[in-house]
Length: 297
Image (cartoon, rainbow, N blue to C red; front, side):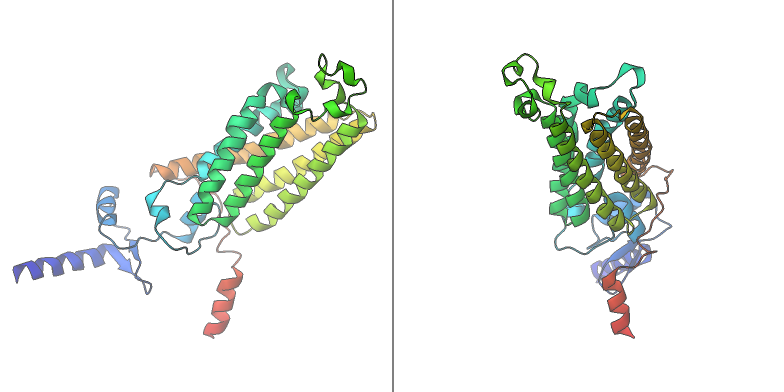
């Protein structure tokens, strides 16, 4: 009998700290400290986080998926963001030509493979297993971009060797096709469609947060400027000023990226100071939520 009273008191204590909703989920009460919360999480059946926090750490509106993988494994989003930032940040300085940097970032080819491509693609695959479709597609596509950009700058792939006027001289001067009209124009179209893809992501990001929207806005403009650089040089015009503008836009983009990366890392360690990212998931309601409200009327 005393055991039953103890279990009942424990249950009442749980209900005091965790408010249970209609779906059987428990929500952390504001009066709990972090140590108590961690202990209670181990005994609670299901813990749900606010839509704002979910959007901040996963960069997509909150969704319902089967299984408990999100509670079992770590959050891969910061890893993919880091791959993006460590690749684009030095490239931004290369495009602006600061400190003598240049050659479209050829000095950091290894970074495009093993940081940008590998980390973003790996992070995207992990997002897939967590059921996060939007970051899965975004990270994998940009991971593929960094792999392809690194391969383009690698002579053994022969991307620009095919455009060389003197094929016999390719072995001693593999970069001679890099500045030909055919290569410049062809690669310019790649930038156009990367910009189109970024614009589509920009529209989708309107349901995430302001910082993520700023990143895709910067990328859309950045790819548009880079396309202009290649098209100008394909017609033997100087694209130096446009390239500098593209580098400056890249720098503004990574500034927003470093901010949201830092915000996520602070959240991951439950740091007492939080950086706001401007949640938009509750401002622009989802189609399913609107349909549910219409059916409830």
